[in-house]
Amino acid sequence: MFKKHKFISFLIIFARMGTSTNYIELKRGLSLYIKQYYKPTTVTANTYSWGDRIRTIIGKNYPCILGLTSHPRYGEHWVVVTGYNFTSHNSGTYTVNDGWGNVGININSSCTDGGVDIG
Image 1 (spheres, rainbow, N blue to C red):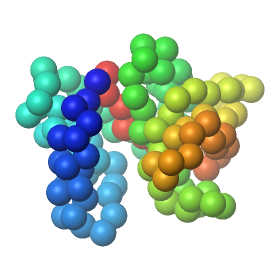
Image 2 (cartoon, rainbow, N blue to C red):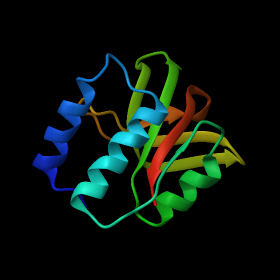
Image 3 (cartoon, rainbow, N blue to C red):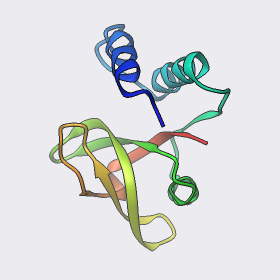
Image 4 (cartoon, rainbow, N blue to C red):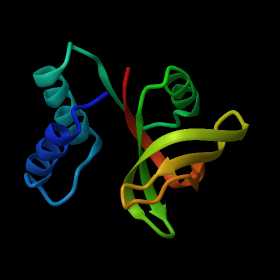
């Protein structure tokens, strides 16, 4: 979907604006990039339990960026959701790429605090 090299260069410049990124900043950065290189699209940031939202977005083959909080390995970190396995309404695991080269990592939903999606 994204022009890989332009997107990475854009994120590097955007990331240098601060030491960490919150939901509003990530949403703003993605919105600016998409507006510059693609047709207008809605970028949504949610900081609530959004298991249903992720299932909908993943079902459409759109990316979801998930915010981790107090995770034993990652601490506060952004990951990309590639799948999920829920045992109840909003309880289960997300399958993610961690941005450090690891794919297919299972993250307990209790270690998440929201996310950003394009859709």
